[in-house]
Structure formats: structure tokens, C-alpha cells
Image (tube, rainbow, N blue to C red; front, side):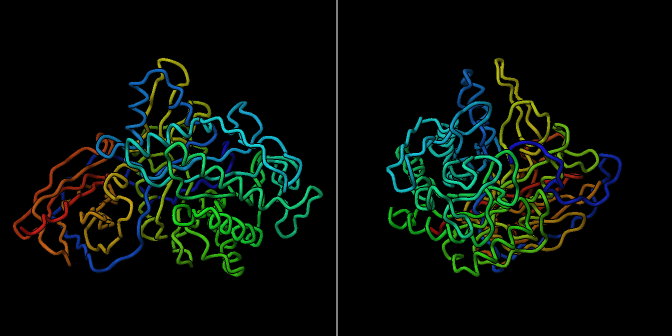
Amino acid sequence: MRTPRLAVVGVLPLATALPSWTALAPRQASTITVDLTKTYQTIDGFGCSFAFQRANLITNMSDKTKQRYLLDLLFNTTSGAGLSIVRNGIGSSPDSSSDHMNTFAPKNPGGPKATPIYSWDGKDSGQLFVSQEAYNTYGVRQIYGDAWSAPGYMKTNNNENNGGTLCGVPGANCQSGDWRQAYANYLVQYVRYYAEAGVPVTRIGFLNEPEFSPGYGMNSNGAQAADFIKVLYATLQAANLTSQVGIGCCESEGWGNQVNMHNAIKSAGAESMLSVVTSHTYTGGSNTPMNTKVPVWLSEQCDLNGGWTTTWYSYGGAGEGYTWANNIYNAITATQVSGYLYWEGVQWPSPNTNEKMVKVDQQSPYNIEVSKRLWAFANWSRFVRPGAVRVASSGGSGVKSAAFRNVDGSVAVVVISTGGSASNVSIKLSGAAAAATKATAWVTDASHDCAQTTVTVAADGTLSGSVAARSITTYHIPAPAPAA
């Protein structure tokens, strides 16, 4: 994604809501049971993109106090969203005008077998600095580089824009030759540049919305993608990078096309070479898992068409925070994704839409507006950490829940109110090695931004708390102390 367009926005509709935010009196407590012995998918994390020079809003900011504030908003696990995946764009443009992402191989070396002419600027459209901060300061370990296109001279249309296909894949013969290996080498070189700067890239993608031909990007069908996956995987192997870097594919505009592409990849025998399947939801999502053993990320979605809003809940609008708390819930529980990413983390005011989570002026005094979408992410990402395993949760009246066991043994239970009334809840853990002795609770609603709220723990380990009307509340139970 790059510019707004008329599209079916990648959000699932909410049930008809009551017309008032006024909460009714809490009902008698209902019980949510968490079964730690029944497991589902492993969570890779939650994140956003900094493509098309949006990272420069942070990188080039002269006010270092506000720069740190922005980074904290995105990545801090105690005061911000605690995002754990960074999605960067790998440039293909010969220049940096407008919001173009410049390539480090702007000149055709004379053919696919000629020595490439690389020129790395050490900035990567501002994304390298943000990635270094995410990795070194905040402990983010999932750095995903995704190319919207190969450099234009490697494509059938000799242009980075307007579609075109990588020369050499099935059905794409070019007079200039077969550029598949050169493109694979290019992507591996990107990984090396980041490694030299102290940032290990963990996922690499080579397409973005390959069925869509806007003013950027590269076309591909599933068979063509499978063909290149084999080349890229062999190139990563030769560079001894397969233990660090996994391939992602194919960033389809919608779930249906991604399913079709992935089926073709399976038929071609390339599924085992993937580390993640990536899809957007602009032209349709899903309420069922994809038929694959490879982890699935919903790697880009946002509200492209709605006017900018910082509202938590008004009428169930596509840009409201409560909508996104529910969108993430549906993706995690019904579609069983392992990663969930918003489109842009930060962006300037124009266009004045909800394609970003934080709106930032490009000039001093760098006014900053934070949407409630970011705080909806916080209730998931701060407490459901990479490597967490989703476990079963059931019960509760007026709420829905999802539960997770983190790598450190702590348990996170995310509870979302389903209507206009507050609900008292009790949470019981089944299958735990020991009864809970302490817990914290954190709420986001119209007046709170992932703020601590009250929870009590009974002698038998049962948690008790209140879930405000149309809110998301996360209960976090630390791992039991080791036996003396």
C-alpha cells in the first residue's frame, strides 16, 4: 500500500452498537476459564511499517525529546504499544523524490550476469535508524524487509512502477536476460547491509500486492512466486543465512488471492521454503485459518478512506480504536494468525486518513496526535510477547477473551467487552503448575490508554476484576516463582 484508494477496508464489521457510551451497572461476575493444556498457534508479534519515507519523520526529527517520545509510543513495553515487528520497505526507485524509497542498485550494470553496482546510503529512507532503535533500545527481534518491486531494469516493463514481472520467471522472457539470480543477490545484499549496521533482518519479502498494478509494485502469480522462492532460498543457503532469515510471501491485497497464490506455491513444492505467509485484507479477510503449516501474518491493514480520528468508540467506525481491538481479536482467534501489523506507524497529516496510528507534523514544533488504534495494539502487544502460545479460554458474559502463555511462563488474558455494559469477571487458570498469587490489569477505553486498573487474586488463584463497557482489558499473571 502507498496511497489511498477506494477499496473494501480490511476491517470486519462490528455488531450493531448501543447509541450511548454510558455504562450500566456491572452485572454479577461471570467466569472465564483458561485451559493452559489446550494450545493453538505461536505468536510472532504485532507491528507496523515505516515504508515510503515515513521513518524519516522520526529519523530526521531535530527535537530529540519528541523523537524519543515517538519511539517510546511505538516500542516501549511499559509506556507505549510495545510493538515487536518492524516492517521496512526495500527500495526500488532510482531517486528519493516525494516519498520514493531509493534503491541501492539504481544503475543497470549491463545485464543480469554483470557485476552489480551497489551504492548504500546508510539511511534506507530513514528506516535503518528506526530499526536500530527498535533492535538495540527496545529489544525488537523481528525485522522484516519487504520489496514492493525489483529495480525496473530487472522487469518486463523496464520500470519499477505500473506492474511488470521479474524477468526469468515462467512466462516472463526479456531481451535483457534472466534477472532472477540478480534479484535474489540484491535481497541478500540488503540483509548484509543491515547486518553491518548491527540489525539482523529476520524475514525477507520480494512482492507487495502482486495482483494490483498501481503506480508502483511488481506483478506475480503463484507459480511465478514459487519459481523465485526456490532461487531466493538457494541464495540464502549459499550465504549461510537460512538460520537467520526466512522468506515471506506474498503480501496479497486480499485473503482470497493469497490463498490462491499459496496453493500454487504448495503445488510447486516451495511451501517448505517459506517461513511466513503474508496477506493484507483490503479486498477481503477471513474468519477461518489458511490451510498451511507455515505461520500466517496479516501484514498490512488500515482504514484508508475514513477521516483521521483519535476516537475510541462512537458508532463502530473503521478507524476507531475499539474496532481495531476487535479486528485483532478476530484475526488471532478465528483466522489464527501469528502476526498482525498495521500499515504505517507514523505519517504526516496529508492525506488526513487513518492509514497511520500516529500523526506527526514534518516541521517544528512537530505536533503529534496519537490515535486510539495504537492503544488497542498496546493491550495486545505489551503483554502477548513473541513466542507466546495461544491457549484455550471460554466463558464470560458480555465479554470475549483470548489467552496466551508467554515464553517466560507468564499468562496474558485479553478480555473485550461486547456491548454497552460493564461486566464483572472472574478468571480461573486450569493446568497451571501453581495457583496465581498476583496479577495486574490494564484497560483501554474512551478515557484510558492501556492504564493500570484494579484486579484482585483470591487464595485459590482466581482473578476478579471489572471490564468497562466497550473496552479492552488485559490481565497479566506473572510466572510462578521457582521453588526454593
